[in-house]
Image 1: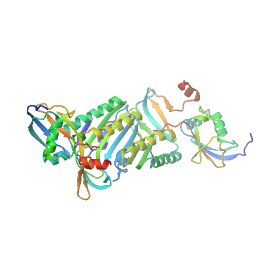
Image 2: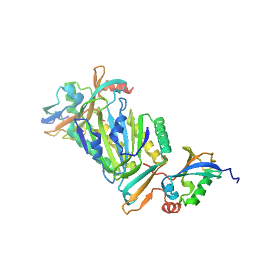
Image 3: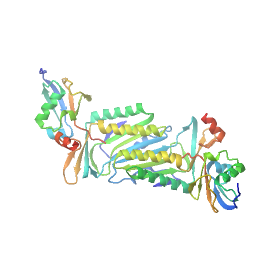
Image 4: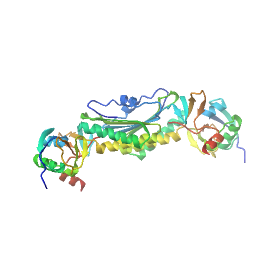
Length: 146
Length: 146
Length: 85
Length: 85
């Protein structure tokens, strides 16, 4: 299951929902808001999503993980809105009979969601400036690649 | 930090203790007691440890993970005593700036603790029998390898 | 290149594009034959700083190719480089 | 093989070995020159079903080699195949 959340992510509740007698291993990933990115002090973060598309694409990623790996349950929640330093921005939890599949599926989901979900992050810096991450003008993006 | 616990593992508390402003990713592993092992219905589990040696070896594994990977914090708790189906037998949590190191270190710790910690598992089966896992007599162990 | 007949479409803007266009969406009539051309027109109009090669595009909640044509009534979403997670 | 002089040692038994020996530990005087020979003696005495190749051994909380000798006052732990996690 994939969901978007406007309120803080309750990891215990999510993780409990994955419990089941056959599951021997649970791997979870939590992405937390860091106070520094690319050397700049971050004050807070803002996530914006194209919700209909994000929910659809998120569900597709979860399903792909379930088809590729022997998992029992897989679930992901992504926050949207304003987040403070230290808050959980994304949670992924995977259960399986054995740990190999759980590690692999969790990794797959995290990697895919970072490149595929239509969600954008605006960083609010300590110096008062803001920036939509990865959305510099083509010229600046090219300069950074040189 | 590595600890042995006689009481149920409180994952939220452990995970909160790993929080820090620099951490961008947390990976956690939970090993749960399954109701079946090797095709036999399991009723409950008993873990016994050589405590002094287990604590020392557990701390060594954590330290190795910290030296090999760019992690911020790494922590592990292993239950001992009687555990019911669904209980968490072992928890590993690792934080890092980025997810690569956190995944790798978590995996390393889990793999190592399973082969190195002087902890033994006795399975109590639904049919009333019991068995110390991996400790069959040499003859039976050989037969299973054929 | 032939001009297609005008179709009524709906566009949603997110993140940087929302801020540059000053709106979260708009309905408009367009004669642009492809999604690429529609984006180029709006890029020029609003000064979007991103080439279409850096974006993806979706119509009616499905990802599309930039060379796809624009059906009447399309709900179009331009997707700047994502940064979830 | 020369017999070493008897030393006073402490042994701890865990898991299967604890159940087979009927005790969680014992103090004994041994003349066994190596840990291997000590284990073989106790294996014969208690009917431990595991060859020493399948176990590890620790003295004073440090893993040791089976061919190490036994210091006086050693705290010896025989470690059957582990199954933590």
